[in-house]
Image (cartoon, rainbow, N blue to C red; front, side, top):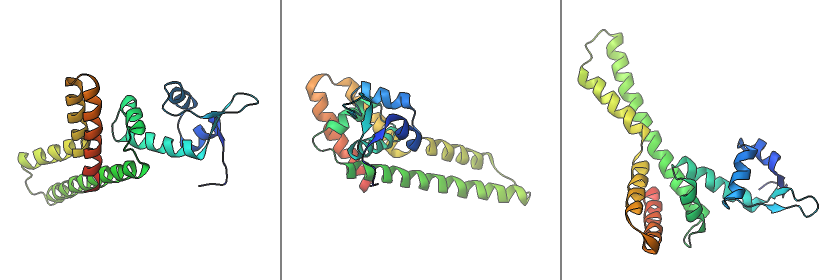
Length: 174
């Protein structure tokens, strides 16, 4: 990490591209609680806070809502490495989908340029490819977990959700 050990909220917002308001909200809901300067009460973010913030940003990009992110970060089997691997897996899948879409578009562009006929089926394949890049398999799996979670009440839900979180992390590193 850097030599700096503490960041004020404005500094951190500027460096990360997050708003001060977002950082204040994360503090308010207990997602990212910085230490306080004893002299003036200002929020001071430490290197540990920075690591946690990266995890929050990654999980948010993966499509998880803040309440689930908070639960994941408090889970007994949580580790920064797992979140990184989950993020890597999702990015690889997204890249693969984008490359597939690009190949299909290149084929159609070449056909159009050569004034060859392009079939409706080819355009349907493009539409399917576009739709598949909007939601990668990991995002679909997250949605399934959320639906099942809503159907189960109480503490059993928490245990099952933690198991599903663990399974989802395993999926990302395969």
